[in-house]
Length: 302
Ligand code: SF4
Image (cartoon, rainbow, N blue to C red):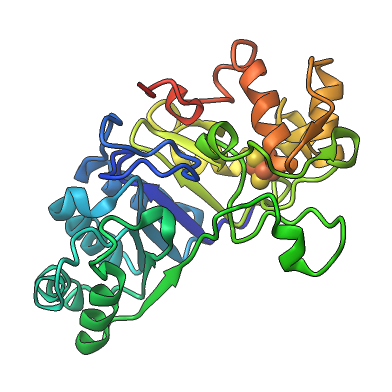
């Protein structure tokens, strides 16, 4: 498969615990990548030959700031383009944000994406994303925003299509969002949820890699653990038709996953990811190596 991007979940830890977070990020989350992990991942990425981008995300990668910087340098030295996804909790003023960002100007970072929405708002009177953007622009750093719209029951009015089930923004109802945000939202019959709308499981263009070594095709669906088998081998040998979770998802979406394993389920769901996440939860005992780690299924939740 032609993987062009590796997204490193430097940590699952975050200062916030957003309802829409599908990796269950939060202050009590465990695990962080080491410099040696990042170096090994980059070396293995080189062997693949197709990887162009290494992203640093989480959780919140700025919580492990020196490791993030070193990781970016390692990736940059090996010829990869690098990006960061951050909730700019560190941008408490333009002056302070500048201090955080100056080291990045020497590392050739190609993309900084900041979270800017009501989910990530820390203190209403403070404009953290604004400070981060202003500081980055003054330093000539490439910066953009990721905005997640809060899903509401009346979103169909906003869509202008009567009866249309639109959940707004980019919220995907997997992980914590499938637990916390589905209440009161419009639903569809499960039989209509016949394709995976967000990931190309047949020919993935990117994977996420977490601090425990798991390689995720979608968050919580793994193709293995690079701490047991080298990353390049795992990616090169990926056979979607032999993957017990991806094969049915490719064939007929989450509805096929439910049918294949004859799972008990509700009649309606908010979207494809909602039923997919629920189905995977009930399959975890059966396929522990493919549906991991527990953290992606809320096992670290208080
Ligand atoms: S349907 Fe399942 S595999 Fe596809 S994006 Fe949603 S959660 Fe991921």
